[in-house]
Image 1 (cartoon, rainbow, N blue to C red):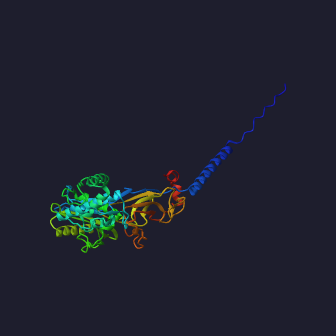
Image 2: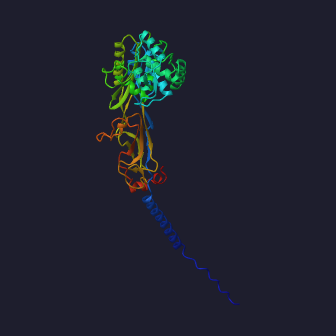
Image 3: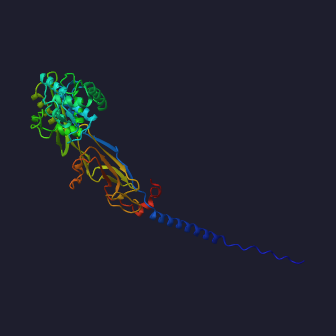
Amino acid sequence: MDRVSPTPLPHRAPRRRTRRIVGLGAAGLAALLALAYAVLCAIAPLPEPVVRLDEPVTARFSADAAEVQRAVDAEQQPTAVGWLHDDAVWTNSERAAPIASISKLVTALVVLDAQPVEAGSDGPTHIWTAEDAARQAEYLAEDGVAFPIPVGTEVTARQMLQLALVPSANDFAAAYAYSVFGDNAGFLAAVRDWQQRAGLASLELHEPTGMDEHNAASAADVLRLARLALENETVAEIVALPRVDLPWGIGTVESTNPLHGVLDGVVGVKTGRTNAAGYNLAAARTSDALGREVVQLSVVLGRDSDEDRLRSSLDLFSALDAAPRRLAIVEPGERLGTATTVDGVEIPILADGGADAVLLPGEEATRTASLRSGGFSEAGEPDAGLTGADAAAGRSVGAIRVTGPGDPKDSAEPDAENGTSPGTPADRTIDLVTGADVVAPSYGWRLTHPRELFTWS
């Protein structure tokens, strides 16, 4: 019997050698991963520092009005004060009081509203009538101010305004009103329409001169009336005159305003006096408010004498002189926030300059801080930010906008020594900058902080 040859078994690699090859593959993979991680840590861009502003982002600043109100409250009779280019009024009484010849401011504004006359021009001409002459006689008989001229005399609107507002002539105030509106009823209808638009709720007028003791208004509304008068260039030009020269044998007439020659900067506006009204004065003057030019207003009603209304007016202007305050709206180098880097370092965010404001009571200045989109920047322009490189201090991250009252002259160059500007421009911007160098973390930190490096936000 033939023998069957045994079938050869398949060849197998030694088991020990296979384990050695697998072990070398795992180590290589680990080394490869470690190398990749090291490279990624080295080249990964750093996240931008997180910038947060301190609260509040918006801040408001105002001057205290308590001293002004105390000065007004110290007066026994109706009183009001304020400034020309502001709506605020401080008063000690809301009741209407007789205003006498201050009525002529209303007359001038109402007629000019219907028939404007440019400042410095003569305006239309009025022929003096027998009715005008008859009223002159009546005013003189009642101890009113009048300057008789012949019937048929040609009188310009400017001359009528000068005589009505400077020496307070009743005859020319009435002639001016009736030459446009025809009679007292037409004039009063125009007054009521104008009054509603002007917002003078307490004003009550019965005729154009103030001879009627029922012509009345509150001290606060008289101050608002004075504002309107000074905002009208034609009226403002005339009430500022201490005297005026006129024809027809009248010659030079003096202003009834007792502040002319007594106080610097007087710019009007109108007196008034009757037995019922007492001695009234609405007055205005320019003043230097810590380098900012302003126009002060005061109203005194019902004083016992010319001396009393002068004294009260001077006291009130002294109080207004002391009222302005210079406030630091932004301090140079003031800290307004923090930039936190990926490795936890806090960099202060500072104001790159400062801004002061000269504020009157009732005024407000505001600063608003905002962050810049697009990363840190230099010279106010966005750039790519801090992506792996150091950055010197002074990088812009945003701005502070300062708004408030101010004069055109306040736009002068900032003070080089302290970074502030004289006065306060109406709108100014100051950069927010980093207050220290931003230093990129070390490679060792990158290796040991993967979570912060790759997921930090």
